Length: 212
Image (spheres, one colour):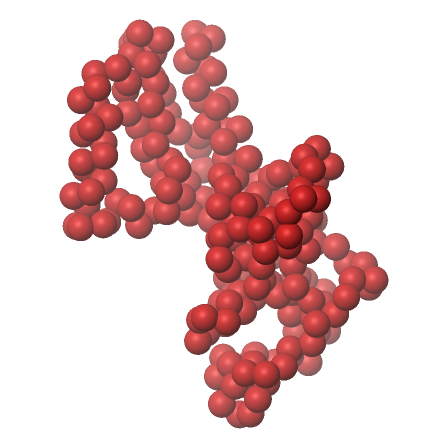
């Protein structure tokens, strides 16, 4: 799994080399496709390139297909983001609100209007970006190793919680112990992970071959 832009590096030469090297092993049938996490049950706009290799001796003449892409989002941020008022608020300040040239003004964000909204809106406030990213209603921007710890829930005036980040990747919040990690390290690991829900759907397609 990798970022979808891998297909376009060096005009596609790098990706073609990777695929050729895998195929030249003459052991696996190679398949690849770009899948978006939000098409498979979780409200995160995460497009990733998946490469699957299936042993020829196992697959034989059976057909592998990537999972179909549903068009309707079954879960939105309302289903995953806590609405508790006990969470610590972190009001925006500094370069976001400094003056009429701050990022809030630049992107014409009506804070008062957003704070009154019922839906959940997550913005990427990565300090190294001279921009504020917002994807669409009910969907989170793509969690990455560098950016996700700066995800800000505008109408709750707080940053994304660790458990909320895990939920957006389909990682169970009570099954694995992350207590030894700092907040920054946890967001790095979660943002660099593969979405569990997408993996499940891919494995279902692989297991169909094994069961035929």
